[in-house]
Length: 492
Image (cartoon, rainbow, N blue to C red):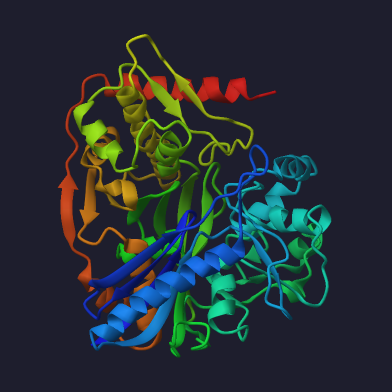
């Protein structure tokens, strides 16, 4: 049997999946890696720790596949996108810790550039907003303040580039169009790096990776660096674009939401990039051959990470999975609202200065109410984004396909369906991010002939039909007031 491996290098850990020709997961392995918080609002990763987690999961899954007597024919990679890595092309060693997509250290720089009137140009070229979320100001900070030297040996990349570099033994410095479109240095209209933006941010173009379509040949793995494998890397996509692909959202208007560390709503908008829309991003979904598909995206910075914080920061829960049971037995948070703006607010607000708040606490508030409020915040923030997208699209949402860790929480998905007034559909394989990466890799080596062939394995596991809900409109209105209070508190 032919097996495709998919590596998902996420924000808190790395997972490697083995998927067969039917799209069914055969084996998986996962490793967390440390998070580093040197200052408030700063989030860093050690690229070497990410690589070691990648190698460990790859070796574990490869051993299982070989024990089954099966053959690995290709590798796909999906990643946390905007996280910025710099390394030395000569030694292969990182030159600094990676600055994570959640990091807000360049908020003042973004405000300065907005005051200079740069944002309209950035929006028209990249589809993005001037925000510290994206790679450009992170890279600029490393080069101007972080002590990284812009010499001939400098290499920059998002996490996919770093992993391919290591898997190939330094033979390939590449990325795909979907990841490139998240750097704020890539022109999504011409599908090339923008010399003007690189000059504006002081980025040497020689340090940038070569951009290729999302499915096709990127590199061949070095068996000494890839658990003995010598196979093509033939699919790459940013995690949210890979999830859109894995959810078989191939028709314009189809939408998905991934509930992960953050949450990301993407809607397929076809082969033409529209004009920028307030509060939303336009991004490359994927490129297959000569055809590029675009998506409109709403990015929510913190959803599942709020549960991790309740676990690690406060000790409110011992394990993240407890949140599902607590949500099920606590139908109402009794007026508690949790705005998890730990690193600012993303779509549709784009407020890097906002910080988290828990409002409505009384003597009757228990830890279960706080947990329920944190879970409801996932649904409320999704509603904020969906409302913004449908207002631009001038058409209501017909359904929402969901994935990611928190999509296993039935109470969350029912509340989400009620809040949106549409059916929410959960697939049999919830890890659609890695499934999408595997589909792209399999297409790249001819295992599947078309995207439809690859995604024929998509099957619905559950659906959640919207139900009438007492005072739902009032609860959403109070959520919006909680957002206003949170933003006002952080205004200084």
